[in-house]
Image (cartoon, rainbow, N blue to C red; front, side, top):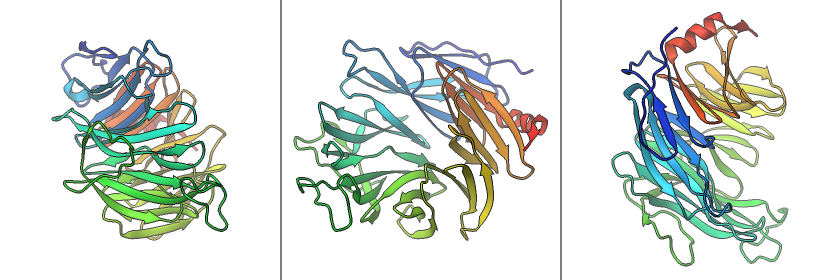
Length: 360
């Protein structure tokens, strides 16, 4: 049994325990509050950790990055003005997150912010204060991998046409316009803040637009998997369409190499990302969530349990978290967040668990 890494770092909402770190050694992070979002890229994980504020409607929260093999824990951003972090993304050394900076009444003001490990002062990658009730504009959670970080800015129509009138055949609240944006070295990011976003503007480039849904689900190796009105679309980071899969009721997707996994009611389906051929259909239980796909290993979660399934032989292995489980699998290993615990299991240990696991 390998020894668990433990080290103590003085940051407000999280601490780690570790010995002299090695890439082959498991590690554990302990947070003061349950982790509300997890992302990973390579040997790093990004976390959203809620705090406890004086005003329960606007609690402070933190974005931190954990590098278990180098025993580093970095506070990227502490937010005290926005309602809370909804999602987080990690692309190399760049972290991005979305928040709601004005949620009073029916009004929704959303934005995506970004920072890097070297420059932690956040910049705005996009903002929209056009939503009221089910209608108007909304910035959705980002997704990232490597050098590509992308998100969706969408518009919902309304009955009176105050924001976006509903075209024929559309109902109030339907998404009628979507644009995928990516972080870039130059170019303006979208914003509709009436008083302007207080953060320094970042740089963005448009990827693709649709007169309907085009919601980023996952990013991998310079490609984007997005949900449309009629299924799932694969795009390059420059916007070239690679594949359209006609699917209904897609609730999640994971893209890795030449494989695309999607969650549909009652099952997980795995497709060839080049041809669109259906390769496998795996029955799923109520509450199963598609978390990740990497190196032929499918990762799902249900409650406090994370299940890995290897496509080559069907072997499975279960990992148990301390709370509602979130998981990301990268080439260095498996990150699991549950409750106030985040664990890292090296890939060699993951493969051993799959060898000893059950066959389904």
